[in-house]
Structures are given as structure tokens and as C-alpha cells.
Image 1 (cartoon, helix red, strand yellow):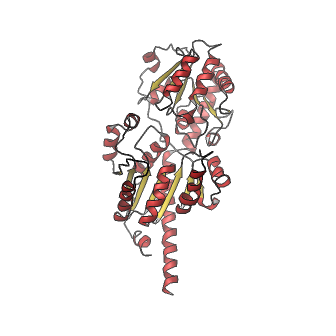
Image 2 (tube, rainbow, N blue to C red; image 1 turned 90 degrees about the horizontal axis):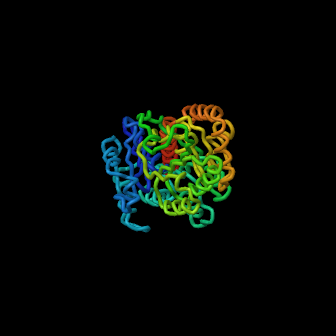
Image 3 (cartoon, rainbow, N blue to C red; image 1 turned 45 degrees about the vertical axis):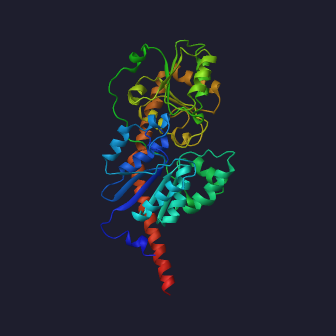
Length: 404
């Protein structure tokens, strides 16, 4: 009962562990966790980024987490802990986490996404971590009763706060999963200001004329992102704009299927899969319209990057996207899995460039005022402090009751 209170003594930095599945600055949730862990105030917080699966085992994971990223992390004030999980159920890795939490007397355990949320619930309870937060970055549990059960009965019951990144995700947590609303908390994502483009001409690199319409998307090639809808929309757009170019930056397990569809629709001259790009800001300068065609989303960082670049945006009205974009104000929203609607919205913005520029300017201003990384980090820092104070108060009350 003295544990939480003693850790709040004067001048003591709060020990925080950020728990993620993989080390990556390409996936949205992993990237955001990286940013949060490395931007906590080092005067007030002793921050550790804990990665369950490290070193990377697959070629895809190695591409997502190059050694340069690890070197940059190790050069920061943030500590790095690798659990080296080797199999789906790895008790050894779980115990390594529990021992670290106990030995370091960690005060705040902040996990991100379903797997780490489960690990954090188990290890955090065993180590008696005073404050635990679970952070869900997109709700995608349709047809997954076991995951919903674990979310409700293990993760939510263990966490002092269960964070949703969109109001729709928070609604599904309470209405579908039946999680106690008092345990959920909506905190929108944020991104840092985009670095200035280097000035490199991506269009020239790719052999695209300055007046050719270019539509682009940035994101991991996985089923959630529904790139096949964008490919089908391109086939429709190419009927009236045979010169149109669609650039897709990202890599993932859906690449083979997307390439097959491109071939079936004879879109090889119109759709280019660029793979991983480290020059995203230069790439965005080549876009006339940016697209998010996802089936579901939390609060997509790629859309925020489009907003920050001032681009005209067409996105599916799923998850937290409507929290970012008011239809017709900051961009155009369309239903998911609707290539005709997607093609129509893209065509409308290509036809009316002034309207697109106005929407892009509004989107940039909104991103910078409402969805900023520093605002997110400061809010989380305040939340850590509030929950620690609450825990200390509960422990003090329990001690007083025990003494009586």
C-alpha cells in the first residue's frame, strides 16, 4: 500500500513503459507509440519503449524496422527493451516483461493495440504496476468473439483507462463489446508538423508530366486499407482520363493480390506500387488528390499527413475519419467499398482545383490546431499524473481502513 505513494516522492521521475508489438515507424499505431515514448518530458519521465517482437523475424518486419531506426532510438533519452517473443504463446518473454516491470518499479504501463494490451494486462497485474493504460488504435473485432471477450474481461478490467482514438471506436467498445463506459476515454491522435520537402521532383523521377493528374495513397498494404477499391476506381477514372497516374506508397502482405488485380484490369500503366518510401513529404508534393480507401480506421495518421500537406482528400467515412474531415469542408467522404463513389469524388476534385485547394487549406489549419502531437503528449502526461494521484489516494484510503 505504500508502493504508489512512495514512487511519487519529490523530485522522482515517473517511470513509464510504452508497450508495442513491433518496432516500426511505418505502421500508424507503432509509429505513434514511438513518437509518444520519445517525446515524454525527460525531466519528469523515465521512458522505456518495450517491443514484444524484436529482433525482427520476417523480411517485412526488417523493412519496417531498419537498424538506423534502432540507433536513433538508442541515441534518445528513451530506453529500449526487447522481449524477443518467438511464438504466439511465449511465457518466457511474458515473464521477462513482468520481471522488468517489478525490478524497475514501473509506475505507468501504457500498451498499444490488442496483443500488447493483453500482455500488459497480465504482466502489469503480476508486477502490481500502479497505473495501466490500454490504447486501441482501431476497432476491428467483427466476428471475433474471443477478442471481444478478452478486451472486455481482461484488458478493460485491468486498465485504469481504455483509450479510443475515435468516437466511433469508443461507441463500439461500449455498445458492442459492453465495456463499462466509465473505463473508456476518447483521445484523438496527433502528428508532428511535417518536415519541409527536400525539393526533389518525384514526378520527374517517375517520368510523370507536370500536367498529368496524379492520385496518391500512403499506407501499409494490408486488407484493412482496401487498396483494391482504389485500383477499381482508377479503372473507372481512366475511361475519361487515360493518362491518370495513381501512386501507392507502402508495403505489405496484400501486394501480390493488388498486383494481380492491376493486371486483370489492365491498369499497369496507371497504377504504380512504389513500395516503402522514406521521402513521403516529397511524394505528397506530387499528388493532386490524396486518397484513403480503408474499410475501417481509428484515427489514421496518413490522413493527418495529407491534411498537413494541404492536399485535397477523398476518404471513406469509417471509424475516426469523420472526426478529422467534415465532408465538403476539409475533403470529401465516400462510403467504403464503393469504387464508383470514390472515382466520382476524385474526379470532382480534379475538375475543380480551386475547390480542392480551399479544402486542403482548411484541412491543414485543422490538423495544426486540433490534431497536434505535442498536444497529445501533454494530455497523456497529465493523464499519467492524474491516475497516479488517484491510485495513491486509493492506496492511502485502503491503508487507513486497514489500520482501523
